[in-house]
Image 1 (cartoon, rainbow, N blue to C red):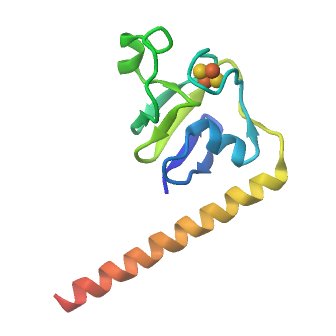
Image 2 (cartoon, protein in one colour; image 1 turned 30 degrees about the vertical axis):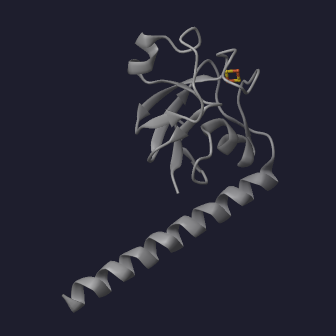
Length: 130
Ligand code: FES
């Protein structure tokens, strides 16, 4: 379950596999500037400082230039994290607009921690048998 950490606030959003950054933000009750949600207007760009992502659909060169493609610019409505990433929003801070949905993100965090703990236990058991 990849996470998105928002710099500098430190908010952590838990995404489902193949979920976009923007979808995860909204699902967790946060708002950010959006436009088309289809990769065409470029208004949802954020800066990715750590981690990697790919786009779930092709993005036009006019929306993400070749230079932006390598400097960490991330089109949040199309970007799917490949691992835990850290982003910084442009020109505004993330806004919590739906506290109820934030509770859903907390449940996702608990599920992720339980899965990680189970994996550690499984690995410890494997190590003991070897
Ligand atoms: S909202 Fe238009 S490109 Fe992301």
